[in-house]
Length: 337
Image 1 (cartoon, rainbow, N blue to C red):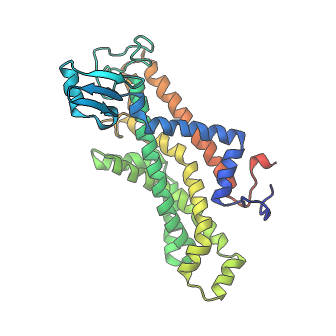
Image 2: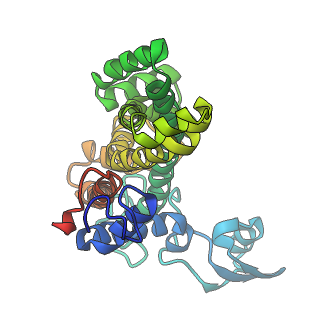
Image 3: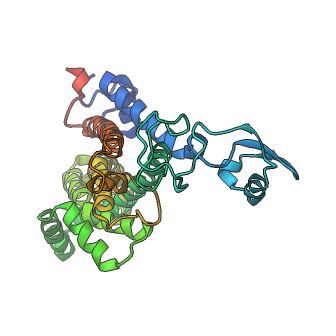
C-alpha cells in the first residue's frame, strides 16, 4: 500500500485505515491484544478478586453478582455463618481487606497466589483493582487531551494572530518542564488530591504536546487546494474548520494522545509512589512499590507491579506508534516496506 493510494478501501490518514493498520501488523496486534487484556482485567476486576461471591444464597434468597453490587445482606449472612457460596471470584479477597498474614510470599497460601503486602492485603487483588484505577485515569486524561488539544490547536493554527502567538508561548513554556514535575507541583498545591484533580493535573501537564501536533497539522492542511476552494466559494471560517480541517486534526490528536499514554501511566504511578497520588482512596501500583522501602526483602511488592507497568506501557507504546504512522498520510506503515 502506497501513500495516497486512491484505490485502497482504507485511505491513509483516516481512522478506518488506522484500525486496519493496528490489526494487520504482527507487533501491533500483540500490543493491541495485550492492551485489551489489561482493559478487560480492569473492567472485570470484581470477578477476578473480591471478598463477595459472584453467586450465593442468603436466608432471604439467591443473590447474583454480589461482588459487583456488594449487597449488605451478603455481609450480614457471612457474619452469622448463614452464607452459602455457589460461585466465587478467582481470589476471594478484596483490595482493601486486611488479614493477619502480612508480607506472605507468593504461593504460600492458595487464597493469596501473589502474596500479601505489609498490611495483610492480597497483592493480586490490589493489582487487578489498581489496573482499573490506572487505566481509567489514563483513558480519562486521553479524552480530555483529544477534546481540549484539538479545539485549542485548531483555533490557534487556523485563525493565527495574537491567540496563536499566546498558545505557541504556552506550549514552549510547558514543554520545558518535565511532566512529573508539573504534576507534583499541582498535586502539592491541592493538599489532598482527588481523582478529578489528578486527571486535571496530568491533562494540563501533557496537553501542550497534543496542541503542538494539532496546530502544526492545521497550519499545513489550511494551505491545501480544497481548503482554498472552500474559501473561494464563500464558506464561513468555522464551516471550513469543522468540515475540512478538523477531521485531519482529530486523527493526529488521537494518535498523539494515544502515544503519550505511557508517559501518563508512569506519571500517575510516580505520584502514587511518592505519596502524592490516590493511595489513600484507591489501590494503586505505585503505593505497592513504595512499601518496598520499609520491607526490602518483600521482592514481590516490586516485581509484580513493575511487570504490570511494563506490560501496560509496552502495549500502549506499540499501539500508539502504529496509530501515529497510520494517521500520518506523509509516512508509510512499517509493514509496507
